[in-house]
Amino acid sequence: MVNRDTFSSYHPVINFLHFGLVLAFSMLFMHPVCLVISLSCAITYSVYLNGRKAVRFNLLYMLPMFLFAALINPAFSHAGGTILSYLPSGNPLTLESITYGIAAAAMLVAVISWFSCYNAVMTSDKFVYLFGRVIPAMSLILSMTLRFVPKFKAQIKVVSDAQKCVGRDVSNGGLIQRARNGIAILSIMVTWALENAIETANSMKSRGYGLRGRTAFSIYRFDRRDRAALVFLLLCGAYITAGALLGGVQWRYFPTMKGVEAGIYSASVVLAYFALCIAPVVINLLEDRKWEALRSGA
Image 1 (tube, rainbow, N blue to C red):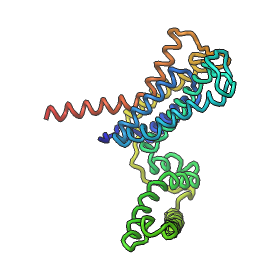
Image 2: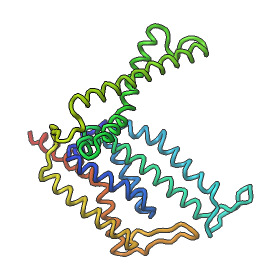
Image 3: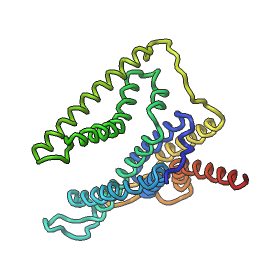
């Protein structure tokens, strides 16, 4: 079941700022607790957004990727002071290399999961709204690129079904014939993509896109709810950044694992990071609870 995402209804500035912060912190923080927070919140939000589709994606793709990335590091990296055993090649297997492999795998999966949430929330019209006046050409190209993959998948299914009706699909004939049919479908799709890009460019040019002084209609309004969210994001981002600069989430893996001692300040930084990552899920759950209360009252 796919839920209605209330966080997507916030102003594009709020959406973009949140994902910018969580993606930056997810790629910079290697503290085990921060990695667990980022990974768990990203997966939770993706499941909330896409339902069973996200669960299937995480099990079929993210879990094998996590295991592969976690195993590949100790197989090739042998640094670390805690030797657990020796590989058949004679190289040591260290606790630090295993732990770092798990941490790197968690960071990779967390970043990919956050990007999947970003693609679901930050639609092309939001991106053009944010950067259309600043970088009009680049924002148009990025917008077309972001929506190219889903449009290409939908169109190739249409072309493939049409070719199947006349017996020219990749499932018809022998190996050579199927290859020819596949090349024909690919040729059709390349032509369609080029024509679609030209039509989009001509359409935007005829509307005066990118011209100085051009006005644009917008359905987005920065209301009281967005102001409260902006204050929350700025405070969390500033506090987490200050905490990181002061060593509140410091952690090393080599030559031996060592991190900042647990204390009130480090715990507060981690708590702020958790609040930042889990914010979209909390917003959605509160809105769902309010909706259910209104329905039950009716």
